[in-house]
Image (cartoon, rainbow, N blue to C red; front, top):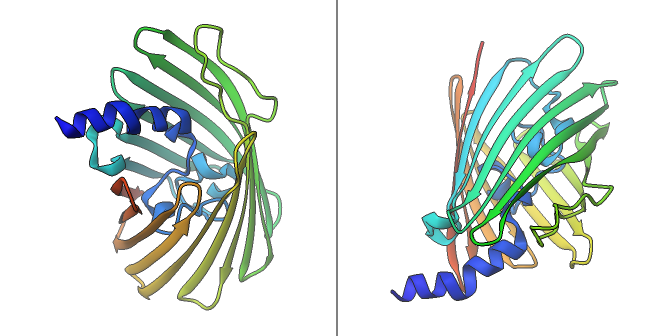
Length: 269
């Protein structure tokens, strides 16, 4: 009873305002404080589409996070990346919430490696929101990103989402956020990476994120990180089993508690 009351009065309204669907996606990112903009992985279709150009084989991924272990607030994601001769194509489907408040985002992205050090990508997202008693609305939103590697140890990523500030129709008052993310990834050596992200949404305070990834063994890595506004401490690990990789992470809020994240990524030959 107390848990339900807390959900109704505090947590659910806060998450509706935050629009979890537009936060970094993937257990790999959340093991490192949510740092994602300069990373190359399957969830780059959400986090910075330019980051999918490193894939040599078609790959599938599923991801799930349960904020504060409340299943009514679960975010589930499905992703596919397929390389071709000319461009890399990515697709993702994200679903957040429950019958009271539900958001879905469908993304289709294209990315091109222009040189050994520079890639660019664009995506078109269809965002749909439904609020019980208030109706539903959906619209298309553009996004773009770049990934630059000025040195073999340094990656610089930039993502811009909804630059023309597209809004829902009049029956949904929630705004679609317009934000920019700048990320840096630095490889200290072959086993350790440091990451920093700056995340700025219009009319909101900047979010800073930092993380570390330590590859103990070619098939096992440990991760840790931190994020602000709100403050989270995160940790996680990755386990590679031939074609399958398992990513797990937990983000911890000092008041609301633990959020588990789990992702499975399968790579075809």
